[in-house]
View 1: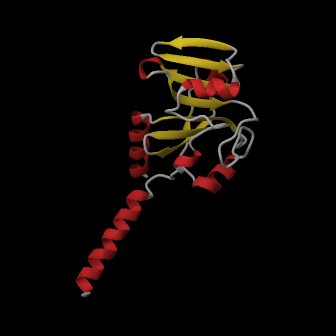
View 2 (view 1 turned 30 degrees about the horizontal axis):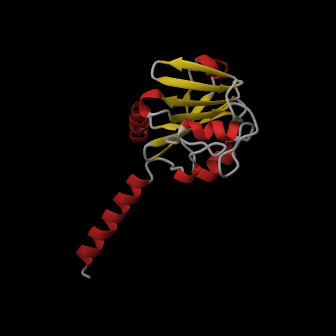
Length: 176
């Protein structure tokens, strides 16, 4: 291989690695909480956890609320497929054991550090206003870790990709 081809190959490899490492990635196997993940039939959630304490409808989204501690959202127009799973207290975990109450340092050690943004909570998450939102992207899904002022995870959400949030994260990454 001549030197010119070697240099072109090296530059190409570096460019691919830089693009791939644009965001700290979370493995797809981590994108569930307590065995529930986006895309599953909501019936599976009910088989494992029973009927929720209350149901709420938000347009085409049905919210399965298990005492404000474990909330699953499903789209009605997709045959009741899960779109989001969230926990707000210890108990349920991600496959690697992350749960509410762990230091964010543990998340960063597993998946890398990402830039956080101030969280503007509403609804059940209003009490988390002022937390920092650390979002990890993977394919068509994302994992959100809401972290309090002392660096402790206050909530975890696994959900379908929010394209606007993804594009904003890319923009922030390239402005740095």
